[in-house]
Length: 51
Image (cartoon, helix red, strand yellow):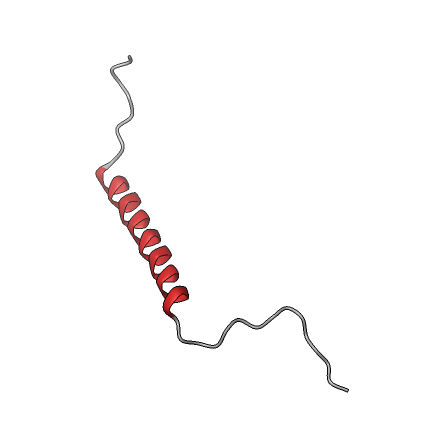
């Protein structure tokens, strides 16, 4: 193996870690909100016209 491999800066690893944590939190939050939301059921794609 070559001895002069590029070394990633520490700040770059920290930024990557923070971004992964933020994405994980957003995904979990979205799942929990969708599961336990007390809102109205989603509207259907079909619209009915009354005559």
